[in-house]
Amino acid sequence: MPASALITLCTCPSQTVAEEIASALVEQGVAACINIIPAITSIYKWQGRLERSDEVLMLIKTDRSRYPDLEQALTALHPYELPEIIAVPVEQGLAGYLNWVTQCTKN
Image (cartoon, rainbow, N blue to C red):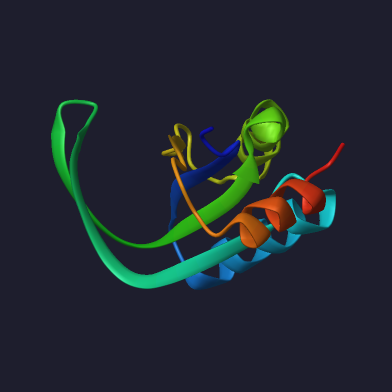
């Protein structure tokens, strides 16, 4: 049986912003754990222009049942007009860790 955990990816403009958002999401119980990966470069088209941004990446661990709440909170907290929010299902993982994610994010 596949796990009910999701890893949600979200970029932020700075370490400070990512830490503030991460703390709020964990405090609200919509995320069990968030890893912040510093110093990534994003290249993308926005409003017809090629853009380049220095960003940080958040890897957000949550339970599938809490994804709607996570997305709503993340959208409200994020400074971008259109934040990157992409959820990827966890197919397998250490059962104890995945159970911990579920317990931390119980509604």
